[in-house]
Image 1 (cartoon, rainbow over the protein chains, first blue to last red):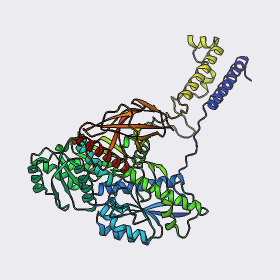
Image 2: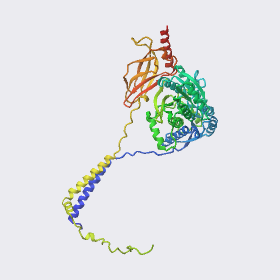
Image 3: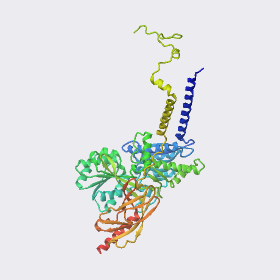
Image 4: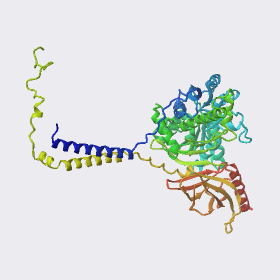
Length: 417
Length: 205
């Protein structure tokens, strides 16, 4: 039997334990955590819809192509995680076109043959797109390119005189060279104060088209074209062209083409002693250009589609999610546009499924293509929607300059015509 | 290596130097000054300990309370402003000869108010004024008509048929100050070309 002292001690202990418990409960109630529900469903269940991807996954342009593929993959995974389209799980099927039109066409046929494919993101190159458009259009399979900039793809071959859409299944999220080339010309002539240009292109659809739109505007502004050359993209020795540039008295070089050639071309032009900047389009806007061009590339310029990533809060989220997903390759110049292209397909599928009582209709491809025309959402690159030609309505572009071994934005423009 | 190590206690055995388990209950431990003080003020001590524990617990919960994420920063002004060409407009009285005017609409879609602190254009032979004169502020969700008046100062330094002319507009909000080029499209390009042509033809004639 406990003594009196022990009873007093026990009463004290009980009182204090009760007080502590009550206090703890009160505090816990006050500070109750709202953990929320983190849906970690990686699957929407039910039907699986495939988003095809066509891009150069190997070869010189693979840095851009792999960025496209990974960004589409991120969009599909995000839609699945959010169960964005009820009853539908998205997966991707990525094919390598090696930047070759013939490979692109084969890939288009392969994607058309797979009934699970309801939309395709790609390609990178305008020349490859030309070979794919009819194949997709015949099958009413929608194609959204994040990177094609040649105006003829949406507005027809006579776009400068009469705009006419050829393929209703073709859309793009990138701004066209009809804006990019002239914007570069305005910057070079008015801001950089360069009046004499040497224009070089790689004879491909993208490069030649971009060089043409640049040249036309540069001349209209009062500039002089002191020389033109076409290079063979299969070589890396441009010493003969570089010498011509030096002897021409050009103050600037405009190159229509891509970074695997533009980098060495810039380096070899500077090696002749000609201190002239090389200017190009989105095809040279990649860190690889600076690596290939070397230290003397400081002052070289590139225009690229869209606003700088740091100015877009939505792009910041994309960058963070891309990093978290752990892809080995960078998202590169077209990552945001690729994510938005894939998301446009996801939105179109969602609309079709919802309009059909929660199921895919038998003519899903045609319906998705039709739905794409009215898709509208706030994407990584801004508001995503398409005009009557299938072109992006959001037309922003930025001039970047090489500074301290990196591309830095120097001027941005918005097309509101 | 071999040998016999210390013998471990086995079942039903106990180590010789282990203390008897019950011995501690039989004898009070030696009590020091602090212990005696504690005996005298047990209630006060326990209450103080309880308060201390409560304060510590409360402090911990306060420090680790769920917090609202900081609000997102306001958007960059260039991402929320749209400038579109309207049509030609009457030139304000008092404008110098070889001047022409046109209207643009400036819309601010969202975010804090945006101040236009400068309107310019890139050609050396043109000068620009506007009504209202910068700086002027526009709130989100509203649109404002601005009349731009251009004066041709030197015909040789103005392109007569630029395909994609633009206005450089300096925008400022609480996030940043930016110069954005607004490319106003083919209608603006044609209007600008014809106005420049008229101004410079009049000059030569």
